[in-house]
Length: 148
Image (cartoon, rainbow, N blue to C red):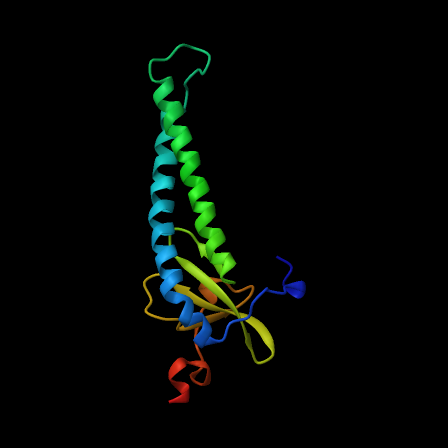
């Protein structure tokens, strides 16, 4: 991503981002579970296929082909979950960790409000190029409770 030219389709306030969390949480729950399962199955399948000669008659070839087809179908389901999150204006980042970024404005620049699946609400933000390791707590004036 070229950060200098980055223009998200939607910019979220903290309130708007938190309001989407029930739906995002449901999608991410399905996504993380399926992503872990796909990862494990892909590794097992690669191990089973390693060293096999596809040209030689193999009594397990039909079963392996079916496993590959099911894996491909689940990879398509993963893509669908990712697209659902993107359609909301958010950006999925870590499939197995359940990381989602919400583009937002802070002090006149675009940043990400950063949420992780096990967090009750959005509590962190980071610069576009910083990633998860650059997360910082939300400024008090930006938090949901600031207006109360």
